[in-house]
Structures are given as C-alpha cells and as structure tokens.
Picture 1 (cartoon, rainbow, N blue to C red):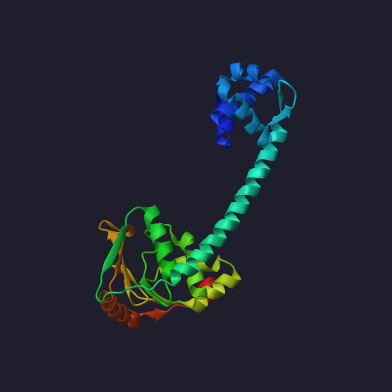
Picture 2 (cartoon, rainbow, N blue to C red; picture 1 turned 120 degrees about the horizontal axis):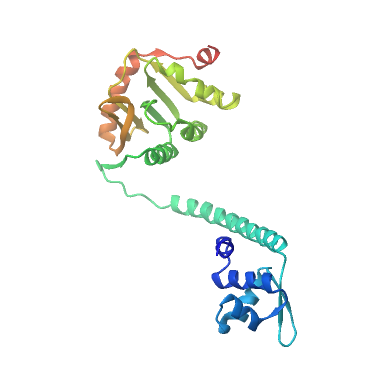
Length: 274
C-alpha cells in the first residue's frame, strides 16, 4: 500500500499505480493477468496500461493479444520527473506572461474614488502580520513615516526585501525609534554592501529618548497603520490595523512631525563600525 501511495503522490492514478506494481511483479504479461492481480476493472485495464505507456512506465508489444512490460523504476521515474519538470516550467513561463499582461490591463481600469471614504483591515497572528507588512510595503509609492514595534515579532528579515524594493521605487522612509534601535541596526549592514548603501540612502532615522507607548505608520499621506502592543509587554505586538483615511493620516503626520523634531539623527555608518 505504501508503494501505491508513493506512486499516487507523484501523479499516477490509483489504477495506474496498481497496474504498474503488478507488472513489476509479474514481468511481461497480458492485460488479463494484470487486471486480476492489480484489481483493476477489466473494462479499464487497456486504457490504464496505455496511459502508463504514454507516461513512460510501460512498454507495449503490438501483438495479438498485446503484451506489456514494466520499465525499470529508476529509468521510468527519472524520465517522468524530467517530463513533468519541463511541463511545469512551460506552465510557469506562460503564467508569468499572463500575469504581466493582466497587470497592464488592470492598471488601465479607472478607479472611482469617493471623498472621505474610510476602509480598514486587521491582522492578528504573526503569519498574518507578516503578510500584512509585506503587502503594505509593496503598495507604497512615495513616503513612509513610521514608529515601528521592532521588538514585537521577527518579521524584519522577511520585510527587508520589500523595503529595498520600495527604496528602489524612490520611496522615502523616515523612521523614529528609541535609543535601543542602535542595537538592531546591524541587521541592515548584514544585507551586503550594496543593499546597506540603499538603506542608508532611502531611510532617515532619528532616535528619541523615550519608549513609545504607541507605534504607528503613515504611508503615502493616506494610509495609517496602528500597532497594538501587548498591555503587559510592550515588546510584543497583539494586532495591526490598517486604515485608509486621509484625514486621520494628516493628523497622525502632525503628531509624527512633533516627535521627529525632538529626535537625534542616527548615523548608519557610525553604528555599523561599532
């Protein structure tokens, strides 16, 4: 049963797996022997064996009656793998083309925006928050103002590639953090010299001599992200809320600027040399 399951896992049907295993055991055989041993309905046995031949598992002798022989498993499985791999690669190339075409077509659809329209979404689990952060950075076009909860969840490594992409798009990031951010700044220098240069150019950091009770971000002057910290441990994040509201974004930007003016400039290069 385990061998049959393994063959099904790679893509054979239950009848195909049973017939191939029977041929491996029986050797050169006619269909009437295989269907009895494999418990495949007689009305289906020829279709099953021809299908196995098409997939490279069986050889067929065009005699009367036909005879069948199982191809060596190593040869058959290697050939099957290469064939499926080629098919998948072809499908991926085609899918990529369709996706790029769809992107261009869908971008052309005009969006009917309504004034003062508010829309919000939430994320609670670590997995959801990671997806949430990645998708949010993927949509940014020009600016980020953020007081991040650096110590809440280990999402930074998965977020760095999206931050780099945003910087490459010309997004300017201003980041406010408490002094202990300096201990985490090494994660940027560990991304390689070229990427570290991008971080230094695209991210402006200031340190404020306080621990923040609330953490938030403002994206493109229109989206606010609120990080809900754990009431018993401000180094843990409970949930994240993203709100599309230009009025709220404006108010939060004003609060951010007040804190920003208190901050002390942070030098990535100097921190990396410590």
